[in-house]
Length: 206
Length: 206
DNA sequence: ATACTATGTCTCCATATGGTGACAAATATA
DNA sequence: TATATTTGTCACCATATGGAGACATAGTAT
Image 1 (cartoon, protein in one colour):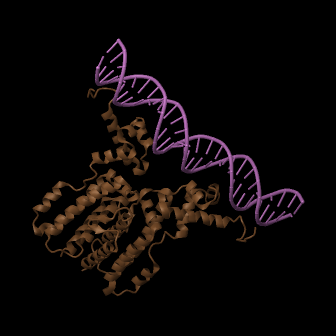
Image 2: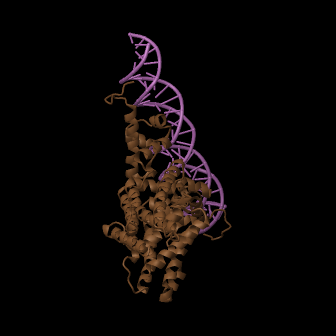
Image 3: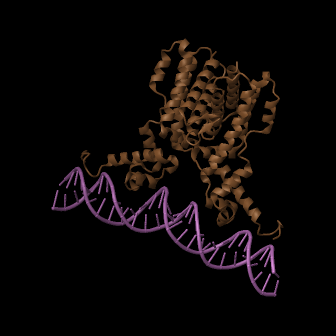
């Protein structure tokens, strides 16, 4: 079998087309638009290939998730910075981490759709992705906790609450323009959210 | 036309059966399970009645939402308490409001499903319900703000963040057991969340 | 050349969906 | 009693879904 990419028939290329079709549909319509027929049409290929190459829709979605690296959501840079941070700068590092999370999620529409999907459906794939993300996130959170030797009361829960708040606001902003008087469709509103994060962290960690 | 309820053919009863069928399906399968055929089967009635009595699925859902009073989510009791609260007790009232929100939402599975639906789909009905809830919520929030004359920096955004955090954690707990090291499937975890809310409020408002 | 396998297209199937028209029976009106 | 209207059932349609078998052809190996 030759590896020439100029051939008309090319398994790897077709697989790639199918994976990209998944991404396109998710971007346009979200996960509820995903289906065997829709993907095949989007990729201009026959749906039987999804079964042959990926063993079905589930396998294709798995391949898609793997390629998009949805399993990781926190950059390595932040991990490194935690190691070498001064105790005095810890507060601002926490703020930076949270605000980075906010901004990154706002930019990544596919990730937003994935997170919505995770909230709607519980299956092999969503469980696996969520578990991975949970571990990665908690790893970071734990590093932070040990860094600031004063093991504050409910640090885990407080961080959980703030991260959750960020997630909800970003996801909700897709369908609503205002939340509790804060504009979610303008940078002005998001600036207020960022300020709120700063104020909470600053007041909580003394 | 007689109003005897013992008759075999009874429009009002049938309408009620259809509305209840909607509630049953949402409770069991969430809003993604909702459809003309599924509702008719659940109610043991013909689907044509949905068109005749409600003008279609949308009208039926509207009737359902109205009957369930989803438009209101904050009890009048809290409104009253805000009026007559001492300034010294303001912090604990805010905490009480937030924790009440948390507990009420945790108990109400239909409302959870509705909120998930609102995040997924943007249509006439979800927009109307969300708008109503937003207004009610902000009304309460505004009352609080004027009560504590020190108009703190980003109070709106801070409350938005906390309420959002509560929403996300409750909704996410349907599909995941742990978030940032906090157990969402045990009362122990929720106690931590409640404590975190207390700590944030107490530290933020001096 | 021949045969073989990999890749891809096509047709068909069973099922489910939303939606509609024809009809039967119960109830109300005359 | 006779007639009209309301309430409900049934059959049907067009369309979309996931899934599988039959087949054509491109690429490889003999």
